Image (cartoon, rainbow, N blue to C red; front, side, top):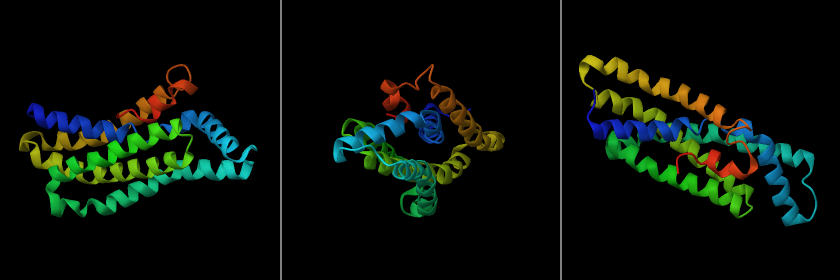
Length: 184
C-alpha cells in the first residue's frame, strides 16, 4: 500500500507513542520500592507514606500533562512541515528514553518524572501530527483505512504494554528499564 520509507516512519512513530501510554500500572510496586531506596540513600530514613503517594501520583499523571503540552505545541507543523515535526519529535523520544533509563542507575526519581513529561510531550505531538501526515502521504483509495491505523496501533500498544508489564514477563525488578524504555 505505502512505500517502504513511509511504512517505516509510520511504524517508528506508532511504536514510540503506543508503548509509552500505559506501562507504569503493572510495575507500580517496583517503582515505589525504587523511590523508597532512593529516599533512604539520600535522607537515611524510609520515605513517608504521604510522600510516596504524592511522588507516585505525580509520576503517573505527569504523562498526561506532557501530552497536553505536546498537543498544544503541534503548531510546529507550520514551521517544520508534518514530516519535519515528526522527525524533530524523535529528539523528545530519545531524551525521554535516556532520562528514564539513566534515572534508575543514578537513583534519581526526579529523572523518571521529567522523563515521563518529556515522553508525554512526544506522544502529544505524535498523536496530533501523525494522523495529518498519514492523510497526506496515503493514496486516496486507502486514505480512510490508513487513518484508522493510528487508533488501532494505540490500542494494540496499550494492550502490549499491559502484557509486557505482567510479572511473569518483563515486570520483574531487573527488567524495569526494559519495560520503561521500549523505544530505545
